Length: 424
Image (cartoon, rainbow, N blue to C red; front, side):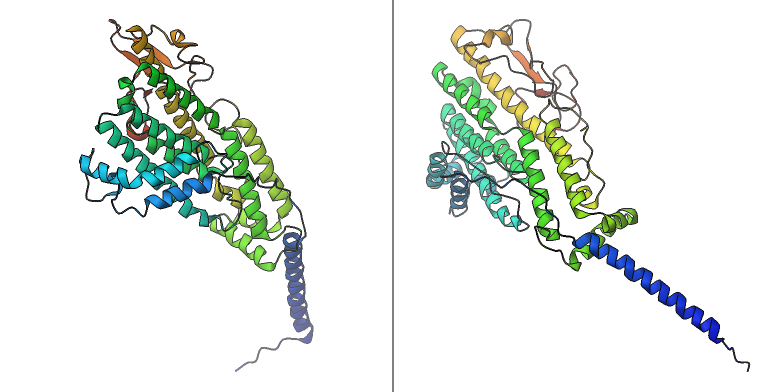
């Protein structure tokens, strides 16, 4: 059998190529390590602190409701039709009084949400669940008042729960805000049915409470700003770049994240991109988005996120635009119910519905209520031909006047947000 012989010169050539390849790979690896482990500093404003914070008091009240022996009807798996039997509401109401009193004791205190800037902020989730549970108890206790013929007490308790909801969004990013909106929506449920039943003096008090809730509601731009601070702070911790040198595992996590986004191009770019430059780009994005969301609601968002993998994971499918829409939905519900209250107050005082919303200013409302979905234009209001009923609505998320045709459940599809149909 013939033997294949390789000459010394060819062998030396092969060895040279291998050596050259190893050197190139080593240099490339060194460049990657250098780029990803350089000491860099990105500044994030410190999270504020306040004295006598209402937030932990609200959480404590929610925790108390979870220890109740008599489950509130909304959480009772054995109850499938609502309203539930009055006895169930009565038992839960009596047992929930200490938690409700604790919640009420904190409504006039300053409130600052729990910080989500730590990588371990998932520990806040238990507190969020306490708040939602407290909201369900508030809703059921209010329903108990309503069923027993006390509409003002029912509305007053719902408004207190809504006030707690808007307060718990203060200083927080997206997650505390989503919980805040859920709390407010739960407490608001079924309030409209009691609005026509109040006395003139009670209407005046309810209007003042609505105005307080509006003042306590943080603007959406503040929520976006803090979400940016949370995001950058967490990335700084992940990269371990806060005035320290990173470690090789940061490089590998970056590579893995890029590959996980199903884009080799993104993965390669993440490897070679300066982390300081990337974080500054992300900060610039949040700063621009904050400025955009100080404007009236519009869609889609003009500000587009940077193309790095981390931002793509944070903002899939226009997350911020979707939350802004939910925020505006919440504002529209509040505005509609406040305006409804003023209309029925006018009816109680004059014996007839107002011919226009202008008639409500300034005695019943401080100003003509604007439609949060229709910049610089009021809510749409019309009386029927005999003046015996009215139609009041916002054009809703599609920003199209559909003539007062109510949207489908859970605010899906086209249509308007119509007073009298704000049950979901």
